[in-house]
Image (tube, rainbow, N blue to C red):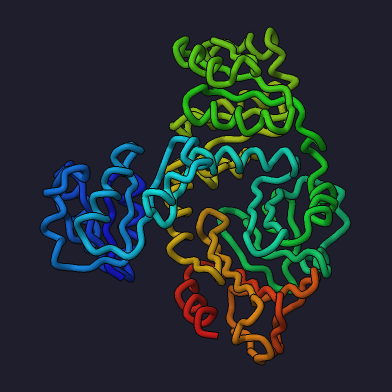
Length: 441
């Protein structure tokens, strides 16, 4: 495909690096130095110019493009560049990154003929909100074709009587991956369970919750008191999302201006505390030590890690750090800190998943991008109904199909029925091969 990326920041760079491996990528940015660094590292066509200036796009008029992606930090610039691109050049599909939560609930994207919009701040906030329903979980993923979820949980039960991962499987739940000592594995039959493993479970909600309570006996069963460190855009978005769950929330921020703005945005329904992070008396005086969960929302991962470790010293059992730098993802897990994708990582993965998905197939990534999930739904009138298919039998891959609410092992040929859901979990290096197979059934 021929793809244009407007913006050469962190998200634009990561997208260009990934997409340029298989596609022709053009990157537009006014920062010539950023474009130069990008061109030195990967094979792209750089265009130096203002993405909000129609003249920037004139060089592209004679060519058609499959996708236009706007990913700067400015909603206004992203919207305007998408409108200009739609007017001046031939582009089939437009994807935009937006910060303002208003756009997530409005029809503005549809009115502007934008095909897909991603809202990374809202997505990060919703990821944390989902932890209130799965208190033992490290992460929860939803899917559009099924109510079944993907949940990761860390093994924290020294008296666990189950030895092998495959013994956790049943008709409502399967183990589809585990992380151990910085490595990600697709499970095999003889893989054993070890303390501190991060195990990925796919299945029905109540069944997953029951198993999480067995695997993790340390984390609180309910998360009713939450402290959020940081009152910038992300901290406020998280507080708004959690307010819907009727929990007690305290927001701690050192900047008086941000405190005032947060109080106004949250309509005084949350206690906003102006305090320097280094004041340890805060845990005693404001009773933060009795929080069921604290969330550190800084843009700096090191600061988030320190804040979580400090909370652990005061006895807080569940600590959540926003993870912006993937190099620190493993350290967070090793320290028993829940790592949640930051807005930039969320934007990157959300856009890749939009590109890789269609009306009948969805693609998602898990375990820091090292695992990929493909789902194909057999809708009414599908040409696949009644067709017999064989699975791909490969290392680092698990295949299942869900029929009438039951998960079946897809290890032999099956005849497809209406309503079936094919689900494949794999290491990401197999992504292109599996994508080709599932799209060409």
